[in-house]
Structure formats: structure tokens, C-alpha cells
Image 1 (tube, one colour):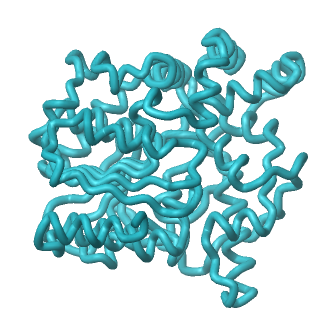
Image 2 (cartoon, helix red, strand yellow; image 1 turned 90 degrees about the vertical axis):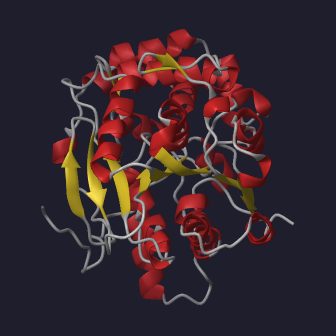
Length: 397
């Protein structure tokens, strides 16, 4: 096993030149990849897009890779992912972070010191922490489907020794929930953060795209990419601003931070933002249609590894963390889970943070507050459901 640790800080890269300035709330909304493609195709000239697609892409292997912040080893190599092990001990159940399989890489879970979900969980007392480091799509994996990722997630859980605590971030949240409902005996507790579950529960900017954009536009995107949805080309056409104020708002950087550290965090964010994942077209189209067009998870129509998913069969304790200013996932799209699962009401914990989508995973205040309380909840440090509700809902009240 190889040990990886970022000791010298991130490599400095030139800041991207924005094509158009947008507010933080607006550009965060476009980070959710199913609808970013729709917005792109609706605004860009199709001939220009086709030219860009045919001009060739850098392979995932040739891209520079942002170092992970926390020391880790590779516990498992699968076709869809590397399972990264950040454990500091061998006691207790494994906490498996299901990272988003979206536009950006899984380093969103371990971005920088003080801005790391992994760090918050480890410092919160969890000794066994793991992350699904999803691989960028290749011509060989372009036909991977949702079932492919669920099957490999199942292999990872078996490797760790069930039952595990499953922590789903954004697009990794619905995958984690589906897995927990498919294999309820293998999951002890569930944490879902900024995850779209019931698209009909409330409208967000992205759910509006789902209604207005024809499915054929997504099919065309996959066709132009020869079965792959290229994250790099999507990113290059957006013209999204990564100005200093916007990045600092996402990271929740305090005003008294030293200039050198402030500059380092800004440059690290720009490097992370520029490193994109390509997605298998088959997987991408299933997500667009089944989750966002047809709302199959909430409707009880989702088929996973040969069986229909019934959320009512899931009775594990659940913790839900949402952002009040999230244009990617409306609060009620996540909190609707409480009425869909079989978990007793007193074992469903909800939290709302006054921030935008990315701050749920990268914001210093959220990581130092809500995520530490999540670690305590997972580690049984909170003694009763009443204490859980009071402490975990404090910000919302």
C-alpha cells in the first residue's frame, strides 16, 4: 500500500480568467453536472460545442492531480474507484464517505487543513474513515451504469466489514441512500449532506432545468462525446467566475487569516476546480432520467441490482445536513427523506447551515461545527435523541 500526504502545500497554478462574472450562489448552482450540460447546450452554439468535442481531450491520466490533504493508503483498487483509507486506528465501525461522482474529484472530501470532511471526522473521534475516490471515465468504462457503481460500493463495504456508517455527499448522497435501502443490514447509520432525493418536494434552479430541458439534449451530449460526458469541456464553456471574494465565501475564510495562507487556499481551490471528472454516458443518462426527470427514488420505482428500492424498509438512524442558500439542492429535496424512510422520527436528525452548496463540504465554519457534531453522533458521544436534536438543530433555530 502506498502512503500519500501533502506536506509541501499545493502547486501554484495560474488563476482562471473568467468569461463572465457571476454571483457565488449562481455559479455554485451550475456545479451539479446533470443540469450543467443542459444549460451549456441551451446557451452555446452547437457547432462550436461539436468542434470543441472533436478537438480531443487530455486523458484523465495526463492531468495534474491535486494532492490529498490527509495521509492515506489505497485499501482497494476497483474498476470504478480507489478506496482510500484515512484510518488512525482499528476500533469501531468504518465510516465510508461516498464522494460525489460529479464534475469534480473526490478531494472535495479532503480539500485542505481546516477545510476537510475527513479531518473533521478524524478529529471528532472516528478512527476508521474511508473515501470512494471515483475514477474518471475512459472508453473502456463508458458503458458503466448505476448498478456498476452500486456493485463496487458493495465490494468496498464488504471489504471494510459491515455494518458501516455511510456518509453521502451531494451526488454521492442518493447513491449512498439507494445502497442503504438495497442492503439495509450492511449499514449502521446514514449521513446525507446536500443530496438530491425527492426532486418534486421543492423547486431549485436545477430541478427547473429538469422540467424545461428535453432529454434529447442530454443524449446529444453523450453522442458528441462518443459515450463519455467530458467534464473538462463542460468547464471550459461555462465561463464561471472564481474571483477572490467568491472563493473565500465558499471556504468561509476568516478575515484575519494570514495573506500567504489565504493565497494558498485560493490557488488550491482553483486547481481543484480545474481538475474535472469525465462521466460514463450510460451512467449519466440514467441519473438524468431516473432521478431528475422521473424522480424514481422518491416514487418507489428505482431498481437497484435487480430489486426495487423501498425506502420504507430502511430503519437505520439518519442525519441530514442542508444549506439554506443551496441552489443546487433545495432543503426540502433532502429533508423529504424523513417521510420516505422507515426510520423512527426520533432517530432522524436534521441540520441547516446558513451557507451555499459547496460550503457544506469546504466551509471552515461548517466543518468546525456541524461536521464535528456529526462525528459525535456517529461515535455515540451524544447520549440521548433529545440531546442530539437540541445540539444538532441549534443553528437552524
